[in-house]
Length: 596
Image (cartoon, rainbow, N blue to C red; front, side):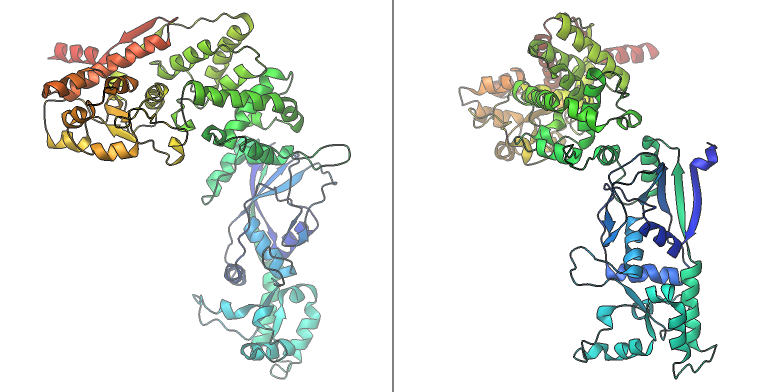
Protein backbone atom coordinates (compact mmCIF):
# COMPACT_ATOMS: atom_id res chain seq x y z
CA UNK A 1 0.00 0.00 0.00
CA UNK A 2 1.20 3.50 -0.85
CA UNK A 3 2.47 5.22 2.30
CA UNK A 4 0.21 8.23 1.73
CA UNK A 5 -2.86 5.97 1.56
CA UNK A 6 -2.33 4.62 5.08
CA UNK A 7 -3.63 7.79 6.70
CA UNK A 8 -6.00 9.60 4.38
CA UNK A 9 -8.21 12.62 5.05
CA UNK A 10 -11.59 12.49 3.34
CA UNK A 11 -15.15 13.74 3.84
CA UNK A 12 -18.78 12.75 3.36
CA UNK A 13 -22.13 14.48 3.35
CA UNK A 14 -23.70 14.50 6.79
CA UNK A 15 -26.87 12.66 5.77
CA UNK A 16 -24.89 10.20 3.61
CA UNK A 17 -22.75 9.34 6.64
CA UNK A 18 -25.75 8.83 8.91
CA UNK A 19 -27.56 6.72 6.30
CA UNK A 20 -24.46 4.52 5.95
CA UNK A 21 -24.27 4.20 9.72
CA UNK A 22 -27.88 3.00 9.87
CA UNK A 23 -27.06 0.55 7.06
CA UNK A 24 -24.34 -0.94 9.32
CA UNK A 25 -21.40 0.27 7.23
CA UNK A 26 -19.64 1.58 10.34
CA UNK A 27 -19.08 -0.13 13.67
CA UNK A 28 -18.41 1.34 17.11
CA UNK A 29 -16.16 -0.89 19.25
CA UNK A 30 -17.30 -1.51 22.80
CA UNK A 31 -14.14 0.09 24.17
CA UNK A 32 -15.40 3.49 23.04
CA UNK A 33 -16.20 5.79 25.94
CA UNK A 34 -19.72 6.21 27.31
CA UNK A 35 -21.66 8.96 25.57
CA UNK A 36 -22.60 11.99 27.64
CA UNK A 37 -25.67 13.27 25.81
CA UNK A 38 -26.56 16.89 26.67
CA UNK A 39 -29.39 18.80 25.01
CA UNK A 40 -27.53 22.10 24.96
CA UNK A 41 -24.43 20.54 23.39
CA UNK A 42 -26.51 18.94 20.64
CA UNK A 43 -28.04 22.33 19.83
CA UNK A 44 -24.56 23.87 19.65
CA UNK A 45 -23.45 21.05 17.37
CA UNK A 46 -26.26 21.80 14.93
CA UNK A 47 -25.61 25.52 15.20
CA UNK A 48 -22.06 24.86 13.98
CA UNK A 49 -23.42 22.80 11.09
CA UNK A 50 -25.98 25.52 10.34
CA UNK A 51 -23.12 28.04 10.08
CA UNK A 52 -20.97 25.59 8.10
CA UNK A 53 -18.34 25.56 10.85
CA UNK A 54 -16.05 22.50 10.91
CA UNK A 55 -16.82 19.88 13.56
CA UNK A 56 -13.41 18.23 13.72
CA UNK A 57 -12.47 14.96 12.05
CA UNK A 58 -13.92 11.56 12.84
CA UNK A 59 -11.23 8.88 13.11
CA UNK A 60 -12.03 5.68 11.19
CA UNK A 61 -9.92 2.54 11.28
CA UNK A 62 -10.33 0.23 8.28
CA UNK A 63 -9.19 -3.31 9.03
CA UNK A 64 -10.07 -6.97 8.54
CA UNK A 65 -9.92 -7.43 12.32
CA UNK A 66 -13.33 -8.27 13.82
CA UNK A 67 -13.96 -6.57 17.17
CA UNK A 68 -16.77 -6.65 19.69
CA UNK A 69 -19.08 -3.76 18.76
CA UNK A 70 -21.96 -1.81 20.19
CA UNK A 71 -25.10 -3.33 18.73
CA UNK A 72 -26.91 -0.01 18.81
CA UNK A 73 -26.47 3.66 19.62
CA UNK A 74 -29.29 5.98 20.53
CA UNK A 75 -31.77 3.15 19.98
CA UNK A 76 -30.64 2.51 16.38
CA UNK A 77 -29.29 -0.92 15.41
CA UNK A 78 -25.93 -0.42 13.72
CA UNK A 79 -24.38 -3.90 13.87
CA UNK A 80 -25.32 -7.46 13.00
CA UNK A 81 -23.07 -9.90 14.91
CA UNK A 82 -23.84 -12.65 12.38
CA UNK A 83 -22.61 -10.59 9.44
CA UNK A 84 -18.97 -10.88 8.35
CA UNK A 85 -17.11 -8.45 6.14
CA UNK A 86 -13.78 -8.44 4.37
CA UNK A 87 -13.18 -4.97 5.83
CA UNK A 88 -14.62 -3.28 8.89
CA UNK A 89 -14.83 0.47 9.49
CA UNK A 90 -14.46 1.26 13.19
CA UNK A 91 -15.14 4.68 14.65
CA UNK A 92 -12.25 5.29 17.03
CA UNK A 93 -13.09 8.90 17.72
CA UNK A 94 -16.39 10.64 17.01
CA UNK A 95 -18.95 8.49 18.81
CA UNK A 96 -20.26 11.47 20.78
CA UNK A 97 -20.88 13.58 17.68
CA UNK A 98 -22.23 10.61 15.74
CA UNK A 99 -24.76 9.69 18.44
CA UNK A 100 -25.88 13.31 18.75
CA UNK A 101 -26.37 13.70 15.00
CA UNK A 102 -28.11 10.37 14.57
CA UNK A 103 -30.63 10.84 17.38
CA UNK A 104 -31.37 14.50 16.69
CA UNK A 105 -32.06 13.79 13.02
CA UNK A 106 -33.75 10.38 13.23
CA UNK A 107 -35.01 10.29 16.82
CA UNK A 108 -34.25 7.38 19.10
CA UNK A 109 -33.65 6.67 22.76
CA UNK A 110 -31.28 8.31 25.20
CA UNK A 111 -30.12 6.12 28.07
CA UNK A 112 -31.50 7.28 31.40
CA UNK A 113 -34.10 9.59 29.79
CA UNK A 114 -37.17 7.45 29.31
CA UNK A 115 -39.92 9.13 27.33
CA UNK A 116 -37.65 11.85 25.97
CA UNK A 117 -37.70 12.39 22.19
CA UNK A 118 -34.23 13.57 21.03
CA UNK A 119 -35.52 14.59 17.56
CA UNK A 120 -34.56 18.17 16.79
CA UNK A 121 -36.85 20.81 15.24
CA UNK A 122 -35.93 24.12 13.64
CA UNK A 123 -37.84 27.38 13.96
CA UNK A 124 -37.72 29.15 10.56
CA UNK A 125 -38.78 32.46 12.10
CA UNK A 126 -35.62 32.90 14.20
CA UNK A 127 -33.06 35.27 12.72
CA UNK A 128 -29.38 35.63 13.54
CA UNK A 129 -28.49 39.11 14.75
CA UNK A 130 -24.99 39.06 13.20
CA UNK A 131 -22.22 36.69 12.12
CA UNK A 132 -20.95 36.25 15.67
CA UNK A 133 -24.39 35.59 17.16
CA UNK A 134 -24.02 32.86 19.76
CA UNK A 135 -27.46 32.96 21.34
CA UNK A 136 -30.15 32.54 18.69
CA UNK A 137 -29.42 28.80 18.31
CA UNK A 138 -31.18 28.19 21.63
CA UNK A 139 -34.45 29.33 20.08
CA UNK A 140 -33.73 28.15 16.53
CA UNK A 141 -33.19 24.51 17.45
CA UNK A 142 -35.89 22.98 19.65
CA UNK A 143 -37.00 19.71 21.18
CA UNK A 144 -40.61 18.60 21.25
CA UNK A 145 -40.75 19.29 24.98
CA UNK A 146 -40.12 22.97 24.11
CA UNK A 147 -42.97 22.96 21.56
CA UNK A 148 -45.66 20.76 23.02
CA UNK A 149 -48.37 22.84 24.75
CA UNK A 150 -49.97 19.72 26.24
CA UNK A 151 -53.36 20.62 24.77
CA UNK A 152 -53.09 24.24 25.85
CA UNK A 153 -52.20 23.55 29.49
CA UNK A 154 -48.53 24.45 29.10
CA UNK A 155 -48.95 28.13 28.31
CA UNK A 156 -45.23 28.83 27.84
CA UNK A 157 -45.26 26.72 24.67
CA UNK A 158 -48.51 28.02 23.15
CA UNK A 159 -46.75 30.35 20.68
CA UNK A 160 -44.31 27.71 19.47
CA UNK A 161 -47.02 25.09 19.19
CA UNK A 162 -49.02 27.46 16.98
CA UNK A 163 -45.98 27.95 14.72
CA UNK A 164 -45.54 24.17 14.57
CA UNK A 165 -49.14 23.77 13.42
CA UNK A 166 -48.55 26.42 10.76
CA UNK A 167 -45.43 24.63 9.47
CA UNK A 168 -42.97 27.27 10.65
CA UNK A 169 -41.35 24.93 13.19
CA UNK A 170 -40.29 21.78 11.38
CA UNK A 171 -38.63 18.52 12.29
CA UNK A 172 -35.16 18.31 10.70
CA UNK A 173 -35.92 14.78 9.56
CA UNK A 174 -38.95 16.01 7.60
CA UNK A 175 -36.83 18.52 5.70
CA UNK A 176 -34.48 15.68 4.72
CA UNK A 177 -37.12 13.09 3.87
CA UNK A 178 -40.13 15.07 2.65
CA UNK A 179 -38.89 18.46 1.54
CA UNK A 180 -41.60 19.06 -1.08
CA UNK A 181 -44.44 18.70 1.41
CA UNK A 182 -42.65 20.95 3.92
CA UNK A 183 -41.95 23.56 1.23
CA UNK A 184 -45.56 23.51 0.00
CA UNK A 185 -46.80 24.32 3.48
CA UNK A 186 -44.38 27.25 3.76
CA UNK A 187 -45.19 28.58 0.31
CA UNK A 188 -48.90 28.65 1.12
CA UNK A 189 -48.48 30.21 4.54
CA UNK A 190 -50.41 33.53 4.68
CA UNK A 191 -47.31 35.50 5.64
CA UNK A 192 -45.25 34.02 2.78
CA UNK A 193 -47.97 33.97 0.12
CA UNK A 194 -45.61 32.45 -2.48
CA UNK A 195 -43.04 35.22 -2.09
CA UNK A 196 -39.87 33.47 -3.21
CA UNK A 197 -37.60 35.79 -1.22
CA UNK A 198 -39.62 35.73 1.99
CA UNK A 199 -37.40 35.11 5.04
CA UNK A 200 -39.19 31.87 6.01
CA UNK A 201 -38.80 30.38 2.54
CA UNK A 202 -35.17 31.52 2.34
CA UNK A 203 -34.50 29.98 5.75
CA UNK A 204 -36.07 26.66 4.69
CA UNK A 205 -33.90 26.48 1.56
CA UNK A 206 -30.84 27.31 3.66
CA UNK A 207 -31.54 24.39 6.00
CA UNK A 208 -32.06 22.13 2.99
CA UNK A 209 -28.68 23.23 1.61
CA UNK A 210 -27.07 22.53 4.98
CA UNK A 211 -28.45 18.98 5.04
CA UNK A 212 -27.55 18.40 1.38
CA UNK A 213 -24.11 20.02 1.31
CA UNK A 214 -22.54 19.99 4.78
CA UNK A 215 -19.64 17.56 4.78
CA UNK A 216 -18.06 15.83 7.75
CA UNK A 217 -14.29 15.35 7.78
CA UNK A 218 -12.82 11.90 8.31
CA UNK A 219 -9.33 10.57 8.86
CA UNK A 220 -9.16 7.03 7.54
CA UNK A 221 -6.49 4.62 8.82
CA UNK A 222 -5.87 1.58 6.64
CA UNK A 223 -3.22 -1.11 6.64
CA UNK A 224 -1.97 0.04 10.04
CA UNK A 225 -0.99 -2.19 12.96
CA UNK A 226 -2.81 -1.94 16.27
CA UNK A 227 0.15 -0.39 18.12
CA UNK A 228 0.34 2.47 15.63
CA UNK A 229 -3.43 2.96 15.67
CA UNK A 230 -3.24 3.44 19.45
CA UNK A 231 -0.46 5.97 19.05
CA UNK A 232 -2.32 7.91 16.37
CA UNK A 233 -5.48 7.96 18.47
CA UNK A 234 -3.60 9.28 21.49
CA UNK A 235 -2.05 12.12 19.50
CA UNK A 236 -5.28 13.12 17.79
CA UNK A 237 -7.54 12.77 20.81
CA UNK A 238 -6.02 15.21 23.27
CA UNK A 239 -8.84 14.84 25.79
CA UNK A 240 -9.81 11.77 27.75
CA UNK A 241 -8.29 8.35 28.15
CA UNK A 242 -5.94 7.14 25.39
CA UNK A 243 -6.93 4.16 23.26
CA UNK A 244 -5.35 1.12 24.89
CA UNK A 245 -4.22 -2.16 23.33
CA UNK A 246 -6.06 -3.88 26.18
CA UNK A 247 -9.32 -2.35 24.90
CA UNK A 248 -8.66 -3.74 21.45
CA UNK A 249 -7.74 -7.22 22.69
CA UNK A 250 -10.91 -7.24 24.84
CA UNK A 251 -13.02 -6.37 21.81
CA UNK A 252 -11.18 -8.80 19.55
CA UNK A 253 -11.44 -11.78 21.92
CA UNK A 254 -15.05 -11.20 22.95
CA UNK A 255 -17.34 -14.13 22.19
CA UNK A 256 -21.10 -14.26 22.54
CA UNK A 257 -22.50 -17.28 24.35
CA UNK A 258 -24.12 -19.82 22.05
CA UNK A 259 -25.32 -23.43 22.31
CA UNK A 260 -21.90 -24.55 21.03
CA UNK A 261 -19.60 -22.13 22.91
CA UNK A 262 -19.39 -20.40 26.26
CA UNK A 263 -19.23 -16.64 26.18
CA UNK A 264 -15.90 -14.93 26.72
CA UNK A 265 -15.23 -11.41 27.97
CA UNK A 266 -11.65 -10.71 29.07
CA UNK A 267 -12.45 -7.51 30.95
CA UNK A 268 -15.00 -9.31 33.11
CA UNK A 269 -12.60 -12.23 33.62
CA UNK A 270 -9.92 -9.95 35.06
CA UNK A 271 -12.41 -7.93 37.10
CA UNK A 272 -13.66 -11.11 38.75
CA UNK A 273 -10.10 -12.23 39.41
CA UNK A 274 -9.41 -8.95 41.21
CA UNK A 275 -12.04 -9.85 43.81
CA UNK A 276 -10.28 -13.04 45.00
CA UNK A 277 -8.99 -11.24 48.10
CA UNK A 278 -8.12 -7.74 49.26
CA UNK A 279 -4.49 -7.73 48.16
CA UNK A 280 -3.51 -4.51 46.45
CA UNK A 281 -1.41 -6.50 44.01
CA UNK A 282 -4.61 -7.73 42.40
CA UNK A 283 -5.22 -4.15 41.30
CA UNK A 284 -2.23 -4.00 38.94
CA UNK A 285 -3.14 -2.54 35.57
CA UNK A 286 -5.05 -4.31 32.83
CA UNK A 287 -1.97 -3.86 30.65
CA UNK A 288 0.17 -5.76 33.17
CA UNK A 289 -2.30 -8.64 33.21
CA UNK A 290 -2.29 -8.68 29.43
CA UNK A 291 1.51 -8.80 29.27
CA UNK A 292 1.61 -11.61 31.85
CA UNK A 293 -0.79 -13.59 29.66
CA UNK A 294 1.33 -12.82 26.60
CA UNK A 295 4.45 -14.27 28.26
CA UNK A 296 2.59 -17.38 29.40
CA UNK A 297 1.11 -17.88 25.94
CA UNK A 298 4.48 -17.38 24.28
CA UNK A 299 6.29 -19.78 26.61
CA UNK A 300 3.67 -22.51 26.86
CA UNK A 301 1.66 -22.55 23.60
CA UNK A 302 3.56 -23.56 20.50
CA UNK A 303 3.24 -21.49 17.33
CA UNK A 304 1.01 -18.94 19.04
CA UNK A 305 2.40 -16.02 17.05
CA UNK A 306 2.80 -14.11 20.33
CA UNK A 307 6.57 -13.56 20.25
CA UNK A 308 6.83 -10.53 22.50
CA UNK A 309 4.90 -8.27 24.88
CA UNK A 310 4.78 -5.23 22.60
CA UNK A 311 1.46 -4.02 21.21
CA UNK A 312 2.31 -5.61 17.88
CA UNK A 313 2.27 -9.08 19.45
CA UNK A 314 -0.37 -8.47 22.10
CA UNK A 315 -2.69 -8.06 19.14
CA UNK A 316 -1.99 -11.70 18.21
CA UNK A 317 -3.57 -13.00 21.41
CA UNK A 318 -6.74 -14.97 20.72
CA UNK A 319 -9.65 -16.12 22.83
CA UNK A 320 -8.40 -19.70 22.58
CA UNK A 321 -4.92 -18.69 23.78
CA UNK A 322 -6.31 -17.10 26.93
CA UNK A 323 -8.68 -19.98 27.62
CA UNK A 324 -5.83 -22.48 27.35
CA UNK A 325 -3.62 -20.77 29.96
CA UNK A 326 -6.16 -19.00 32.17
CA UNK A 327 -6.71 -21.55 34.96
CA UNK A 328 -3.01 -22.26 35.67
CA UNK A 329 -2.27 -18.58 34.99
CA UNK A 330 -4.54 -17.53 37.86
CA UNK A 331 -2.65 -19.82 40.25
CA UNK A 332 0.72 -18.56 39.00
CA UNK A 333 -0.29 -14.91 39.34
CA UNK A 334 -1.65 -15.45 42.86
CA UNK A 335 1.56 -17.21 43.85
CA UNK A 336 3.50 -14.25 42.47
CA UNK A 337 1.49 -11.80 44.54
CA UNK A 338 1.75 -14.07 47.57
CA UNK A 339 5.53 -14.17 47.17
CA UNK A 340 5.73 -10.39 47.20
CA UNK A 341 3.28 -9.87 50.01
CA UNK A 342 3.85 -12.75 52.41
CA UNK A 343 7.47 -13.74 51.80
CA UNK A 344 9.08 -10.42 51.00
CA UNK A 345 6.50 -8.54 53.11
CA UNK A 346 5.83 -5.92 50.45
CA UNK A 347 2.33 -4.61 50.95
CA UNK A 348 1.64 -2.95 47.63
CA UNK A 349 2.67 -2.81 43.97
CA UNK A 350 4.13 0.68 44.40
CA UNK A 351 7.19 -0.94 46.00
CA UNK A 352 7.99 -3.35 43.17
CA UNK A 353 11.21 -2.07 41.52
CA UNK A 354 10.44 -3.54 38.08
CA UNK A 355 6.94 -4.05 36.72
CA UNK A 356 8.40 -6.84 34.58
CA UNK A 357 8.90 -8.92 37.74
CA UNK A 358 5.21 -9.80 37.48
CA UNK A 359 5.88 -11.38 34.09
CA UNK A 360 9.07 -13.29 34.86
CA UNK A 361 7.99 -14.59 38.27
CA UNK A 362 4.47 -15.56 37.12
CA UNK A 363 6.07 -17.56 34.33
CA UNK A 364 8.35 -19.25 36.88
CA UNK A 365 5.33 -20.30 38.98
CA UNK A 366 3.27 -21.46 35.97
CA UNK A 367 2.61 -25.20 36.53
CA UNK A 368 5.69 -25.32 38.76
CA UNK A 369 5.07 -27.89 41.49
CA UNK A 370 8.31 -27.28 43.39
CA UNK A 371 9.27 -23.59 43.24
CA UNK A 372 12.57 -22.71 44.91
CA UNK A 373 11.86 -19.73 47.14
CA UNK A 374 15.49 -19.35 48.17
CA UNK A 375 16.35 -18.88 44.52
CA UNK A 376 13.43 -16.48 44.02
CA UNK A 377 14.46 -14.26 46.91
CA UNK A 378 18.02 -14.02 45.62
CA UNK A 379 16.66 -13.36 42.14
CA UNK A 380 14.50 -10.49 43.41
CA UNK A 381 17.22 -8.73 45.42
CA UNK A 382 19.96 -9.34 42.88
CA UNK A 383 18.11 -7.60 40.07
CA UNK A 384 16.38 -5.00 42.22
CA UNK A 385 19.58 -3.52 43.69
CA UNK A 386 22.22 -4.34 41.11
CA UNK A 387 24.07 -1.23 40.05
CA UNK A 388 23.19 -1.92 36.41
CA UNK A 389 19.65 -1.75 35.04
CA UNK A 390 19.02 -5.40 34.12
CA UNK A 391 15.27 -5.64 33.58
CA UNK A 392 14.13 -2.60 31.64
CA UNK A 393 13.38 -4.04 28.19
CA UNK A 394 11.95 -7.10 26.51
CA UNK A 395 15.40 -8.49 25.74
CA UNK A 396 16.13 -8.51 29.47
CA UNK A 397 12.89 -10.42 30.07
CA UNK A 398 14.03 -13.18 27.74
CA UNK A 399 17.36 -13.51 29.58
CA UNK A 400 15.57 -13.67 32.92
CA UNK A 401 13.24 -16.41 31.71
CA UNK A 402 16.23 -18.45 30.50
CA UNK A 403 17.85 -18.13 33.93
CA UNK A 404 14.65 -19.12 35.72
CA UNK A 405 13.95 -22.01 33.34
CA UNK A 406 17.43 -23.38 34.05
CA UNK A 407 16.72 -23.45 37.78
CA UNK A 408 13.26 -24.88 37.25
CA UNK A 409 14.25 -27.61 34.82
CA UNK A 410 17.72 -28.54 36.07
CA UNK A 411 17.84 -27.17 39.61
CA UNK A 412 20.92 -25.27 38.53
CA UNK A 413 21.39 -21.55 38.29
CA UNK A 414 24.28 -19.15 38.29
CA UNK A 415 24.21 -15.42 38.97
CA UNK A 416 27.05 -13.26 37.76
CA UNK A 417 28.81 -11.02 40.24
CA UNK A 418 26.58 -8.56 42.05
CA UNK A 419 27.84 -5.01 41.61
CA UNK A 420 26.62 -2.18 43.80
CA UNK A 421 27.77 1.42 44.19
CA UNK A 422 27.76 2.88 47.69
CA UNK A 423 27.25 6.32 46.18
CA UNK A 424 24.03 5.16 44.53
CA UNK A 425 22.67 4.18 47.94
CA UNK A 426 23.74 7.49 49.50
CA UNK A 427 22.02 9.55 46.82
CA UNK A 428 18.84 7.53 46.32
CA UNK A 429 16.17 10.14 46.89
CA UNK A 430 13.09 9.98 49.10
CA UNK A 431 11.14 11.81 46.39
CA UNK A 432 12.25 9.52 43.57
CA UNK A 433 10.12 6.74 42.15
CA UNK A 434 13.01 5.10 40.34
CA UNK A 435 14.00 1.46 40.49
CA UNK A 436 16.73 1.86 43.13
CA UNK A 437 14.51 3.97 45.39
CA UNK A 438 11.73 1.39 45.26
CA UNK A 439 14.25 -1.38 45.89
CA UNK A 440 15.60 0.31 49.02
CA UNK A 441 12.09 0.87 50.37
CA UNK A 442 11.34 -2.77 49.57
CA UNK A 443 14.40 -3.85 51.53
CA UNK A 444 13.27 -1.78 54.51
CA UNK A 445 9.77 -3.27 54.26
CA UNK A 446 11.09 -6.84 53.99
CA UNK A 447 12.58 -6.59 57.50
CA UNK A 448 9.08 -6.11 58.92
CA UNK A 449 9.96 -2.88 60.76
CA UNK A 450 8.46 -2.30 64.19
CA UNK A 451 7.00 0.92 65.48
CA UNK A 452 9.33 3.01 67.64
CA UNK A 453 6.72 3.88 70.22
CA UNK A 454 4.49 0.79 70.19
CA UNK A 455 7.40 -1.63 69.84
CA UNK A 456 5.29 -4.78 69.58
CA UNK A 457 3.48 -3.49 66.51
CA UNK A 458 4.60 -3.95 62.90
CA UNK A 459 4.43 -0.70 60.98
CA UNK A 460 3.48 -2.29 57.67
CA UNK A 461 0.18 -3.90 58.61
CA UNK A 462 -1.92 -5.50 55.87
CA UNK A 463 -4.01 -2.37 55.48
CA UNK A 464 -1.09 0.04 55.71
CA UNK A 465 -0.90 0.83 52.02
CA UNK A 466 -4.66 0.97 51.53
CA UNK A 467 -4.98 4.39 53.10
CA UNK A 468 -2.57 6.26 50.88
CA UNK A 469 -0.42 5.87 47.79
CA UNK A 470 2.46 7.30 49.81
CA UNK A 471 3.73 5.18 52.69
CA UNK A 472 4.07 7.02 56.00
CA UNK A 473 7.80 7.68 55.86
CA UNK A 474 9.79 9.62 58.43
CA UNK A 475 13.06 11.53 58.23
CA UNK A 476 15.28 10.20 61.00
CA UNK A 477 17.04 13.56 60.97
CA UNK A 478 13.91 15.72 60.36
CA UNK A 479 14.04 18.22 57.52
CA UNK A 480 13.26 21.27 59.64
CA UNK A 481 15.74 20.14 62.29
CA UNK A 482 18.53 20.06 59.69
CA UNK A 483 17.42 23.44 58.30
CA UNK A 484 17.43 25.04 61.76
CA UNK A 485 20.71 23.44 62.84
CA UNK A 486 23.27 24.13 60.14
CA UNK A 487 26.32 21.91 60.45
CA UNK A 488 29.07 20.47 58.30
CA UNK A 489 26.94 17.85 56.58
CA UNK A 490 27.41 17.43 52.84
CA UNK A 491 24.79 14.78 52.11
CA UNK A 492 21.11 15.45 51.40
CA UNK A 493 18.77 14.69 54.27
CA UNK A 494 16.23 13.48 51.67
CA UNK A 495 18.48 10.50 51.05
CA UNK A 496 16.61 7.25 51.62
CA UNK A 497 19.36 6.41 54.10
CA UNK A 498 17.65 9.00 56.32
CA UNK A 499 14.18 7.46 55.99
CA UNK A 500 12.23 4.96 58.08
CA UNK A 501 8.70 3.55 58.04
CA UNK A 502 6.63 4.70 61.01
CA UNK A 503 2.98 4.81 61.96
CA UNK A 504 1.28 8.16 61.52
CA UNK A 505 0.85 8.60 65.29
CA UNK A 506 4.55 8.07 65.99
CA UNK A 507 5.51 10.27 63.09
CA UNK A 508 3.42 13.11 64.53
CA UNK A 509 4.86 12.49 67.97
CA UNK A 510 8.42 12.89 66.64
CA UNK A 511 7.57 15.88 64.49
CA UNK A 512 10.70 18.02 63.94
CA UNK A 513 12.41 17.12 67.19
CA UNK A 514 16.15 16.48 67.33
CA UNK A 515 17.14 12.81 66.94
CA UNK A 516 18.86 12.80 70.35
CA UNK A 517 15.68 13.99 72.04
CA UNK A 518 13.20 11.46 70.68
CA UNK A 519 15.70 8.56 70.63
CA UNK A 520 16.42 9.11 74.34
CA UNK A 521 12.66 9.04 74.98
CA UNK A 522 12.12 5.74 73.13
CA UNK A 523 15.30 4.16 74.53
CA UNK A 524 13.45 3.65 77.79
CA UNK A 525 11.76 0.65 76.17
CA UNK A 526 13.94 -2.46 76.58
CA UNK A 527 12.98 -3.65 73.07
CA UNK A 528 14.12 -0.47 71.34
CA UNK A 529 17.48 -1.81 70.13
CA UNK A 530 15.65 -4.61 68.34
CA UNK A 531 13.26 -2.06 66.87
CA UNK A 532 16.16 -0.11 65.36
CA UNK A 533 17.59 -3.35 63.97
CA UNK A 534 14.26 -4.04 62.24
CA UNK A 535 14.74 -0.74 60.39
CA UNK A 536 18.39 -1.47 59.55
CA UNK A 537 19.33 1.61 61.57
CA UNK A 538 22.87 1.41 62.95
CA UNK A 539 23.53 1.32 66.71
CA UNK A 540 25.57 4.49 66.27
CA UNK A 541 22.59 6.86 66.64
CA UNK A 542 21.55 5.14 69.87
CA UNK A 543 25.09 5.55 71.23
CA UNK A 544 24.94 9.29 70.45
CA UNK A 545 21.63 9.59 72.27
CA UNK A 546 23.00 7.84 75.32
CA UNK A 547 26.07 10.10 75.32
CA UNK A 548 23.78 13.10 74.72
CA UNK A 549 26.13 14.31 72.01
CA UNK A 550 26.42 14.15 68.22
CA UNK A 551 29.23 15.26 65.91
CA UNK A 552 28.61 18.28 63.66
CA UNK A 553 28.44 16.04 60.62
CA UNK A 554 26.17 13.50 62.32
CA UNK A 555 23.86 13.18 59.30
CA UNK A 556 26.77 12.32 57.01
CA UNK A 557 28.19 9.78 59.46
CA UNK A 558 24.76 8.26 60.01
CA UNK A 559 24.15 7.89 56.26
CA UNK A 560 27.56 6.23 55.81
CA UNK A 561 26.84 3.79 58.63
CA UNK A 562 23.43 2.92 57.24
CA UNK A 563 24.89 2.31 53.79
CA UNK A 564 27.23 -0.23 55.38
CA UNK A 565 24.33 -1.81 57.28
CA UNK A 566 22.36 -2.21 54.05
CA UNK A 567 25.34 -3.73 52.27
CA UNK A 568 25.70 -6.26 55.08
CA UNK A 569 21.99 -7.07 54.78
CA UNK A 570 22.43 -7.63 51.04
CA UNK A 571 25.26 -10.08 51.67
CA UNK A 572 22.83 -12.01 53.85
CA UNK A 573 20.17 -11.94 51.12
CA UNK A 574 22.67 -13.07 48.44
CA UNK A 575 24.65 -15.82 50.19
CA UNK A 576 25.59 -17.66 46.98
CA UNK A 577 26.62 -14.58 45.02
CA UNK A 578 29.85 -12.62 44.84
CA UNK A 579 28.93 -9.13 46.10
CA UNK A 580 31.30 -6.53 44.71
CA UNK A 581 31.12 -3.03 46.18
CA UNK A 582 32.38 0.12 44.48
CA UNK A 583 32.24 3.75 45.54
CA UNK A 584 32.12 6.28 42.71
CA UNK A 585 32.15 9.12 45.25
CA UNK A 586 35.76 8.26 46.07
CA UNK A 587 36.59 8.04 42.38
CA UNK A 588 35.08 11.48 41.75
CA UNK A 589 36.99 12.89 44.74
CA UNK A 590 40.28 11.45 43.45
CA UNK A 591 39.67 12.88 39.97
CA UNK A 592 38.88 16.29 41.46
CA UNK A 593 42.05 16.19 43.56
CA UNK A 594 44.16 15.26 40.55
CA UNK A 595 42.65 18.10 38.56
CA UNK A 596 43.59 20.57 41.27
